Image (spheres, rainbow, N blue to C red):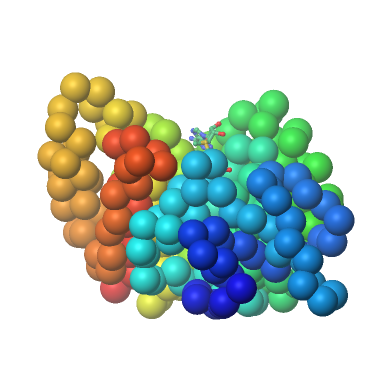
Length: 217
Ligand SMILES: C[S@@+](CC[C@H](N)C(=O)[O-])C[C@H]1O[C@@H](n2cnc3c(N)ncnc32)[C@H](O)[C@@H]1O
């Protein structure tokens, strides 16, 4: 097991995070124990950042102590891996619009202690304007307003020089157009506000998705 990205460990084709909550195996495919440490397998079929890492993403700007704003947290599956990486000194402000998913997110958050669940609409960042400035904004919201949501939230919460990551779902923006055209257009919109650092297509793990890393100018 080798730490190839800070907080992300690799064993052959599998990636892992070091578990903050030992013995708790929700959202993981398998657990590997080495000495006193427990490692949770991070499944690229179920999590877009894991797919991006497996597909060769080089810039992964989350580390121990990072403060993260996570838009579209669902029940907290990917959040739980971010939670392992940021550790006790970091925090994840996790925004989710669905009450059903937010109930599961509350359970994940109670287990971990570094996730702050927020039942809110990411299109309205003014509804959670008490959130502190963050090092990273991550968005995984399947919506035709994806880029606008990212711009609004990074304008408001992202520290200068901070990073953003977005999983662009081409079918949420336009079901019929060629995904490559949709990515190009969305990247042009995002690029007016944020510097484009890196992009990786997520096929075959997530069809018609592009993962983009950005930086606040
Ligand atoms: C693809 S799922 C997220 C999966 C999650 N990121 C993970 O990997 O565990 C998208 C989520 O975005 C939420 N969502 C959609 N529109 C939203 C909005 N305007 N504000 C906040 N969440 C939203 C959905 O309810 C859904 O749970």
